[in-house]
Length: 285
Image 1 (cartoon, rainbow, N blue to C red):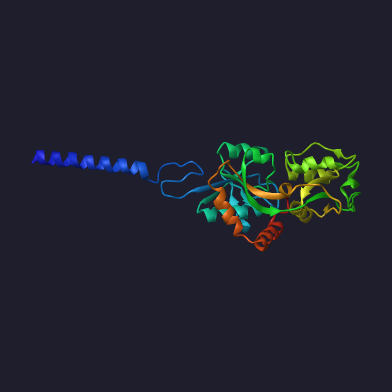
Image 2: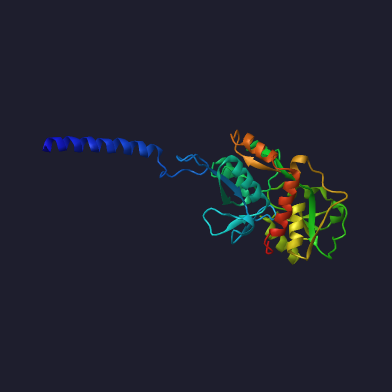
């Protein structure tokens, strides 16, 4: 009897070992890197953005108006880019993860695999296309100049009206390069982000900064001391300069599917999303 029990015990232990081995290779308890497929079949879509470029993206302290939690923080990200990212994640069948990243850190984060994509109001310029791929465009805008209401440049109609003015733009953007088209301009040092430029404009350190129309509308809505100039004689730009697309790793398998998803968002819906973003932006930004 004891021998029979011993044999049964051994067989039971063997069965447990086999089952445990199967479970360890396909269970749901394993930690899965961001952007990869989990054992349960779910996936994450990890998006990098600076969360400081309203109405495209911003930071807020709660999940109101559809904001998404920022990974590793108590903050949330909202804005046009976030709404587009939500639609892409849904179309991909993935969980959206937002990683707040400084503008200069976005390309390195993407190429190193820390994030799956950049959805951050980024233009698909030829220079950037050398290191990353882009989706089809998901927004297109025009360049404007944000200035003080009632100031010396409020009634400007041409970029050449800013001859002698102190003008800047965001660091490492084509916005900064087009300032050279203004004869006699005082080209100030590029700034890291748009909140810094708004502070500089408010304090008189600069006379204006180059931006895209949605950000300018956002700035004027947030601060009655600001307005913006839509030029009759404006900056010379390419279509790619004024378009916005999703940044992806070279040869990414996501590109084709993301293009299909973006194609399903009508121009009317895109404009509605932007209008809502302008209304919903936090007043402090």
